[in-house]
Image (cartoon, rainbow, N blue to C red; front, side):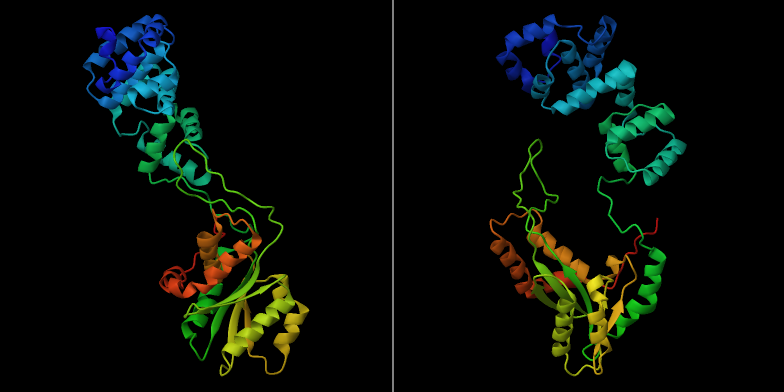
Length: 374
């Protein structure tokens, strides 16, 4: 290995280079693949002056690309990933040597002015970008400033942005209506709830027998498969969550119908034989407002009092948080070889709720988030 090339790579890479001396000779013969002679001379001179390891590696990668080395080989020799090598090349192609050096000496200070940063924040708050490269394109078109995707990601983090999915909410949700209902109806009911004034939040759940992929930690560069079934069968659960005890009453049925709702009414009435009235908060599902349910509630001596949530307000139903916990602990990222095993896991969740009481107290509170404000 020549002394001039040896100085371009890190000492820990020497074994890799010596192991593949034939490839190295081929790469040297290809010098000039992307750089002009003047640019190459300039980078070689800067390499010998530069002490910053990140900048040194950046220049190193560009020179080896100019020698004709494949990206993967450079990544192995410099102990960086292949995407970083490609990013260094994109930086050179979009901003040239001066762009490379500008990034070198800027450190963590953004290339955008304070006014441009505020304009970028406004854009990000109104338009959801799926990739940092798309933000780079916007910045280049709007301000004439070039960022690499990696540098943009760092800038976005410094500005307080994180990469996550938006929350899907009903299109017709009305935050003002929800706030009024919570203040005038829901919170007073919760404040007076006790053994003499039982309060429940009810809802149906229909988990399908199939794979439900969710986020999880997976080794970089690898995929994880989640086996899935046809999903044509469900476990249908009609449940009620008490407040403030956070106890759960649930019934399974082949299908959630008016009869299933009335069966839940009867179960709640049996749990509180001395209560003059039992309040149950429900959504506006058709089976909760059917003629049969209305007839039941209108009977003499009926102690079930239903309070219907505003339309499109699942966020106000506390039992939704219980359903979320069920999905997170039992359904998401899980494969069950048989429907019986799937159903048994769900039954096990309900059987073990006593051991999760502290978790339920933390998760199920009287704090509500109102959706549909924007």
